[in-house]
Length: 430
Image (cartoon, rainbow, N blue to C red; front, side):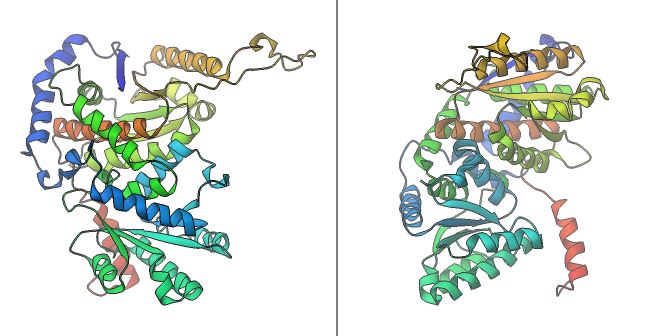
């Protein structure tokens, strides 16, 4: 189970500060669990985790088996949570270079930008390859994925013919409403459900995330079991609950002018998970003139770019560092008889050992420099841990946002740029 170490925040906070916040965090958790707060019609994610194999999970696994059998490439079309959740999961578990491995289909993402260069590169990658697509959208009318959908449907129909192309198009959308649901019904595409009471950034434990994961060779049932275990273990109303500790500390630090949270990890494959976390907390808390700015960093690489700012810049930052248990297989550092690089003092040491000392040294430097650090300790990276992390952060975010006094489940500010863009593009009605 995920553990939270808050011993490195006591320079800015005290135990009495935390204990004084107990009624507040209790109320926030109660409001969330009982569905009494703003946005309570979007709480379906709370009960997604399951210990049982559902029919939807079986359908996901059957579809993934078919895609893995007939496709060299699987293109996931989506933006926001429809993009960040699947990519976060796949890169964390399978690695950043998963597309260079031969065992699984290559997985690419489209519809998350308006870049001509990115689109042309994807077209080149698809040339001469068998491919299938997964369109993920509640509405089907969001500009970026809708443009990619139109183009990729045409490419499939040109390559395979209209009828065979239909067997390579998978839709994940609202169960009853929206343009994409109508498209799926009219064309006969196999479709999966985004529950109406689950918002996009909380949807990774639906088919939104689970189908791409399954195509990548990640067991969706193992992910769900990890999430279900987290749901059970985090159903505590005390500071023994790691979600309580995390949500409380970040709010108390925010009230002490620590307005930027830097989520850090020493695993390069965590980069897109950090992006998913950034959307989750940014869209949930950044409203009404409030909110901790969610930033991310990859250590040790970013210590050579952001390290100076973290160490001696404005004291408005706190860090959350996610640590994974080291892998069982060790990599040892060899000796060199010339020792021109001066590294023989590390001979026989494991790379994990060196990384641990880098973490400890950085932790000490940043805390001494006035940066409070929350440490999250997770197990080794696998599907079970993945499910646990997704649920932990979703629950923590809901509690934290209610402590902040905002609705965790709307995002009214996102619509402003769209209205301006539609007006400039000449969309009817704008």
